[in-house]
Image (cartoon, rainbow, N blue to C red; front, side, top):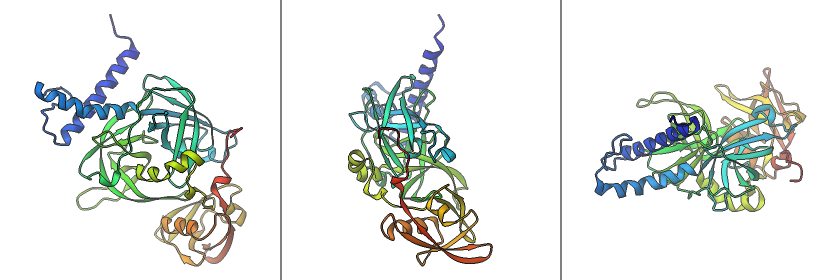
Length: 358
């Protein structure tokens, strides 16, 4: 009798998972006699191998698919779309899930999905502007294993890691830490200690990054090009938000729905770094920048008299210069003419759309 298609798919997926885990252990140089997925080890070694595979299997099972539908008139729909898909990782015995924030930003509906296409409705417990992470809570019990948070700073750069995405189409594979450094986004975002890993994958949104102990090291955010050097060519890499940022913010996120650092000034403009300096590439409708008359193409030279050449300089000066709601002065160049533009910033958390009743 032929195997049903659904069972065949699940069996094939489990084989890929086991293959990846064993290859990860082999690459780590553990010397356990592992053939690539063939299970070729001595009986006396089998217990040790299973002990090593167990935390990786738990890590894989902790990753779920995340699907959300945004509030109909939410501003974020213009850039992120109304229907979003990605992954999340269970980190609490109560079913608490961490994911990348943009998946559930201004979401009206959220559901969690496992690799067998079982679904659980969920609610957004926290959306944190400062870290770019969000917390979700299933509305019914899931019985999924929770994984511990690791320490990304302790992970040796030469050791491979396991990257897992969730849901029926989720994948598992090994990846390598290429760099650990700050990351600045065009959308008024900056974090320290971001993890840059390769090879890059397209299913990175909310994916889990794990060490060989099955501890969560990061949550997937995006794909960016990384400039090469003498030993490594230019390549695309995935950027992961390190869980170290979550650890320090977790209590506030659980209790307040955000960390204290998320109450920060917001301009509502997107910028990019160019040879000539920082260029405005997009202005959010009805944002402080829009009200002040800033337009795409403006070159930003200073904020409150402080020179800025990089995105990180601009965003950190904006957040550290005073309360969230205040007037800042941007010195810009437009069509060759220099001008100073006062902008009254707002608290980013106050302008986000929330579902009815929240």
